[in-house]
Image (tube, rainbow, N blue to C red; front, side, top):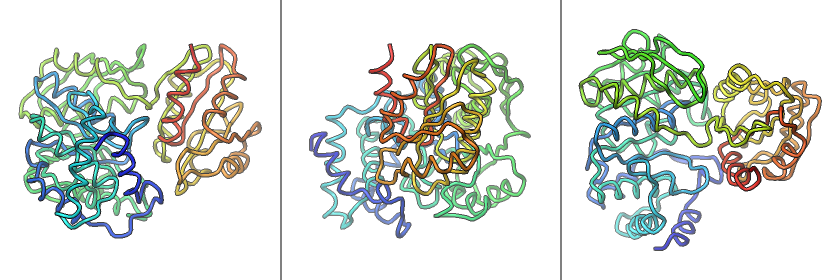
Length: 431
């Protein structure tokens, strides 16, 4: 199967990606696919990562730490920004389109043999496991797609299970409380898993403790951030793990929260190896870590930033970084779109939209995109004065950049779909 046909196959099998609905959560389909392939998910040890926010950054940091330690690392993440090939990497290099088509084709051939019709995410997950097994990676870093217990990635048996934090997200599938969310995410913990927990709420910690696992390390008592200072291009942090204090580590990502992610990632990798890492490995790993679409600066004069915040907690972090770390001197322009299922008013309040001089609303380029008119109405309700509507992300960006002076700042956010459309357009438009 070539790349174009693979994309057609995935589109024909998309369900949640188009509707935002899971009809019957089950691991039966992915288990039968994996069984038909010889269970490639067990071909290498696994670090499995879940949480409401910070999964992507933590996965990338874990990947780089393992790579600098000399291992061949297969990493599976979701969603993607511009190409589905971004979801599967080996040593941080995305799968080639030709290889992607081959792997998707192999999974497609199993529909009759396995007697199942896999969805988009089942297919990609099975293809990733097969590719990692074919390429004989030393370790897999697997990011959960949705919650945990019924996520297709949960056919792995994690040596290390990582939980970044718990927030109220995906409450249409689990909720209405954080405790309900935590129980679903705790589903990735297996009997032999060492658990590295970033959540600090005592009630939720007990849920993860009760889930089993071989050991439990908690942010605060067992690991954490000793120092956290703003630096040019990121943060200068001191990290504390169960074995070691690492001072003056540069993390080239924006926001205080990235120090927490760094401590979590470092503790997870130390736990995987059952030993501390050298300062040189840590410095090289974090220096090479990038997170496209997460508070990514794509232009200067005006400052243009894209951030894939897509829930209330992520939007709150995004606005804090924008106003506190950057504190633009000129006008502040917000370009925002979101999906149905997100309360636009809550998102805009978390983004502090009323502190922007102008808000330009656009639809996220997805079948689940919320109309610009609905976002604009919510913006007016939260107190925004200058509110505009645009028919597309690209036209919204053009309007924002055209009206911005050299001292102004443009923030594009609200959905990874918005950011995925914004990045190539901004690369073409900005010098």
